[in-house]
Length: 242
Image (tube, rainbow, N blue to C red; front, top):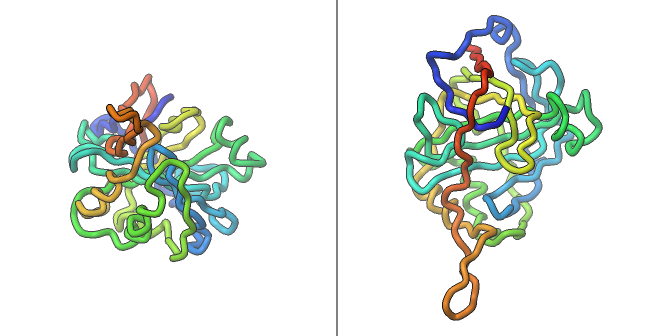
């Protein structure tokens, strides 16, 4: 039950129950507190109190924990999920944990139905104004472990496309520990990111380094921080058209 996967649209099943249970979310923009270089990319840490994600494939209430993104070296690679073999330039993940069944994010991460992750595709186009609140300060966290406060409110819902059709399936985290505890909700329609914003993402230093002839380490750039697609192993992908 590993993620990401290639979403083959001809094999997706429609689920009438999903249509009857619209997704509901509520986020507190001022609760986006800090921006961290994890060594594999950036991550916004969120104080989740007051946030809520319910409905759709979710039987419980989930609270926003953090969000981050994955990207590649060129505009046609970078997303983790693919659609009929096609990759997008970038993919945003909003990670939520099940506050009804578990007492902490750590417990939820390794438990059934513990996490819900919303995936949003980015394609190259116009500058993304909400994302600029992150890319404009990425120079402050160039190296692994660097962290800075977020002083401008970020509304995670501003990253959602206007068309809210989505796919959903059961899978895993795409980074260690790869726990198979995730209900994935992947919006079908992409939003836009500018080429300049992608270049800013690629300028981040990763956790790995190469030793040059003079003995000093030179850090690699974060250019491809996406995991390859994993086998479906008989799992079903469902869709809920609005």
